[in-house]
Length: 257
Image 1 (cartoon, helix red, strand yellow):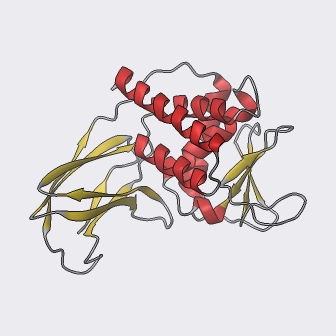
Image 2 (cartoon, one colour):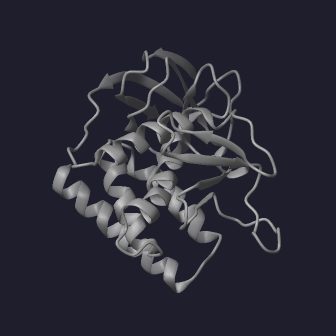
Image 3 (cartoon, one colour):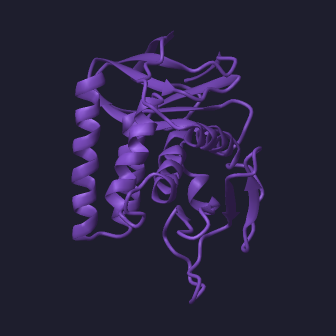
């Protein structure tokens, strides 16, 4: 099933109700109808009966394309074994969190970059993008490489501890949802601008997530992107990082709902 919904770039939450006639794995994707590599959610759920999906969209397109399909049959012309009962808009819930003018400025720049980076130009040496006020810079590489060996590093982004310049891997970011991109950029921003200990990964996780969740971004995408990063570099340290961020997200949801 494919349906287009006009949102006029208004932040919102889409409530999508799906019913199956037995246990099925159902995929749900929401993308920008007019731009490539620009997804707002990519998720699945094993459904037996009726289930509601809530897709939080702090950043929304002019027109969203909602795609629902059965994992076994794929995106064919006919959809077997399920129905989309309704797609409605409900208010997006955000949480007031004190942010400096600098952080608000970076959030605006990061949102613009996340909206566009799926089709922006990149290069092996990095294509530079700057915020309108000139205070922030992101270099978009085809892939991120080691400064010394020039070998590809399996990381979506990194930040210079000297300048605050962020480097992004287009190869990885173009596969991410908008929310996943934001989670990573806010993590990198936190290293340089918010952390008491700039090199502390867990502190950057929490500082970034505090902004991310307060803006109404979905927690599932935060889990997905960090698990994606951690599985590429399994370690005791990353296990502890996951436990801390999981605890933070759960406590945030319990406190603010």
